[in-house]
Structures are given as structure tokens and as C-alpha cells.
Length: 260
Image (cartoon, rainbow, N blue to C red; front, side, top):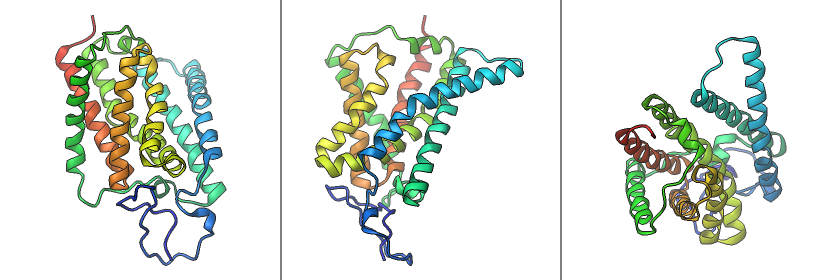
């Protein structure tokens, strides 16, 4: 019997996976992929901010007892990492308790069948395309609180390490792994990919002072990550593209040097 969890590639335009034969007992029809719904999505994304706030409170309690509270950049990255852990723990529990479903398999965490190198290479290609489009749009330099986190090369490297590992992993699992399958099922492939890219762009809005040009570029980048997820059936492939996309921009930032 086909497992309802394995969204193995390639995806059809409706995001219905081709499922391999498995010895599992027959599953109820309610678990046909994607077996979660908009209510689950609202619950998961609604827990995002509370998880981040709780992670900050937890850190403050820890550093009341343990001396040596880290500086701004490191503190921010630790808090965000703890927030992500709590957030995805809630998703793990949602999938396990409500559906008795495996976590990574449900979110299409599989390596693409045609190898991963092409998706590694697509990241820098996309970054250069977005940069050129940004020039064409005359995208302005904006004041951003994010710049304060990159005051020296060590801080840039810390943020860059986070931005090419934990950041892309968590964002792709949330947006392309969990949100996008339901959006595509409801709206179709093109509309579902674009819809998923809008909250992805809004998540990064404060980093760019809500500049509409930056948000447009983020929607386009998010749509490219969604396209990778669609054609491969693999969230891991989207993570690879996203990570090397970020790596390209952070490398340019390191070469340029700290913000004045």
C-alpha cells in the first residue's frame, strides 16, 4: 500500500506525490498527501511569535543565573535558534499527535533523485539574477536594524553561518514543506507558489524597512525556491538553493566589509 507521507519526486502540478509501494497497513483517506489543512497551518504559524518571545524570556532567566550574557549579535542568534527549536517542536507534536505522521517525511525531506549539485549551483545564479533586477528597479539602500548585527567581520560571519544553515532549513520546512502543499492543493501550482512567497517576503520585511522593491525581490526569490520544491518534490533541494543563494550575498558582504 502506498504511504501517505512520502512526497517523492517528481510532483505533478497539483502537488500530488507519486508514492512508492510500502508494507504499511492501509491508511485512512484523510491522510492523502498533504493530509494537514489550513487550520493546522494557522495554528503552526500562529505559534511562531510566541515561541520567539518565550525563547527570549528563557534566555533572560538563564542569564540571571549564569554570568556572561553574550553581545547583541550572538544573543539574537541564540534566541532565534531556540525560538525555531520550540516552533518546530510544536509542528512535530502537531503531526505526531493529530495525524500520527512522521515529521521529516511529511515535509518532503528527501534528496532530489537527480542529485543535489544543480540546486547548489542554482542558488548563486538566482542571487545574481535578483541583484541585477534590483539594479534595474533602482532598489534603494535602506536603514535596517539588521545592519546593527553586522558591525564587524566576526558578526557578519556569525550571521552568515546562521543564514546559510539554520535560517534556510527552518524557512523552507515551514513555507515550502508545510504551507505550500496546502496552498497548491487549494489554488493550483502557480498561485500556490506565489501565495507561499508572500508571507516569506513579509517575514523579512523588517530587515529592509518594508521597502516594496525589496519585498518584490523576496517574493521572486521565494517563488524560485517554490519552483525547486515543485519540480523535485524535495524540500531539501529548496533548502540547498536557498542556502547557496544566501551564501552568495553574505560572501559579497564579507568582501565589502562591515557596515559603517
